Length: 307
Image (cartoon, rainbow, N blue to C red; front, side, top):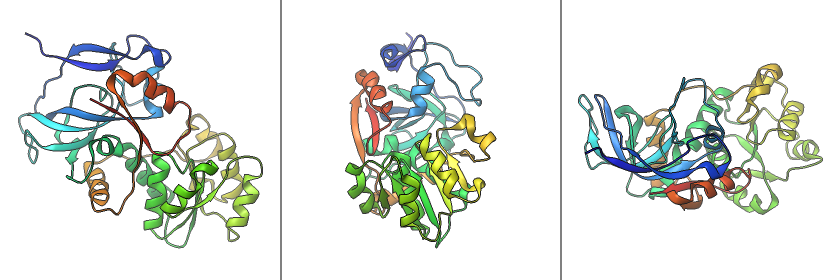
């Protein structure tokens, strides 16, 4: 008899309401792969775009029903031939291209890292997008000690990671966010500033020596302000305005996610040296509500699904 699993999937693109819990065939680990019984999966704006029918260029096609999600944590329950360093029963966190909103996921054995005991499942399930995106972006920007970095959307999951990573590198960070999130940003080590009219002037007042680089997690006016303040457009990364990046001469995030990077930040979290709050955990049956919240574009910390 075919093994089945529950997954939050959609049979056709559309709004959040198209996400339904379905019974679908459970994947099986092949050579070089592991299967993970998922305990938590991160929710991202990326997933909402997939739900509307978009696919990134590195995925040529995906069948319907389509399962979103590309970050997860859980327990390994199958290990394929040729996999080393991973065993059934291991608690891991990892990443994929799609398919994480499900009870089981199959990935390459090289795409998971051990989950330290001190990392809760909800944190582990949503960690990869924030830390991988942030570190790849800051590497691309070349942020170093003594520089000033402007982070737009600093209270979100990528912003939270970027602020801390930049501070570890010795940079001063100015973070834009709603005023209700300013104490949170101060705790992370950033100098907070409110969005809206006059933002460029407020940032100039906080950085009389100028802004060296910017990470745009908001788009629109935030990107315009970055262009105004950063002399070298090659030191601006946008996470949201991909369609405008090339014509404006700004960067998008490049590079590969790695289990080494993911495991490193999981260890820092377990040691109490890295903060990564979860805003809200939804049950798998509430995936549509999770998408409604992520599409507001506001809020502090990470949204996850739990199985």
